[in-house]
Amino acid sequence: METRRMLGAWGVAVLWMVVSPQATAGILLQNATASYTQEPYSFWSPARTIDGVIEGIYTSWAIYHPDETPGNWVHSETIVWETQRDLTVSCETPLGFLLYQKDRLPLPGHNLGRFRLSYTTDDRSTFADGLPTGGDVSANWVVINPSWAYSETGEQFTKLDDLSLLVSGGANNYPTYIITASIAAVGITGFRLEALKDPSLPYGGPGRDISAGNFHLSEFVVVPEPATLVFMIAGAAGLIAGGRRGKPI
Image (cartoon, rainbow, N blue to C red; front, side, top):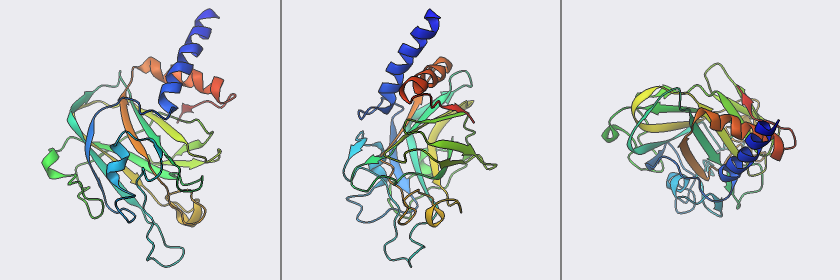
């Protein structure tokens, strides 16, 4: 009983670090590049997803097409990042992916509705040229199979056959998605996030914005975490969210 109390207390501390407005120290990323970015780029930019600013105004990547016909304002889009140093990981040390969606300019609800994560070991000179639109997002990508997911605002995650995650329910109010995955790879040089359309989402997604299907990703953080950390976060989730726990998926 005492051990469980201790685990829960440590879990609260860990989860506080993960979902607090201060950036959680993670693997250093660079050259954020996107297939498309909403203009003006001085406001919405792939680079803003790795600038250490999690919460504020104009601190995110967004994909709204103002010149498109009504009902066709957003499409599936891709953003990629390079790791500053080669990263080697094993299944014994899962990776954690923190997707912060805390840009305060849009109304609540501008959050990812369906997305998929991948990694590559390709040479950095062959992808991620830093362009906000029409950037080089092509590489030999290995799709990541997520094993655990949580949102502090109660969203649920469904893993689809293509290993993407479909988000539903919850408060849909400036959430942080926490995803973990066990990966065995030598020399990871980059990560990819695909924002994917889905018929269950407003205007087909890929975001949950009810006015257009858009989203705002304010920060993307990758953290190497011991396997025990997963359970610590899970324990904290139950305490903080009134019984809503992250779960294996």
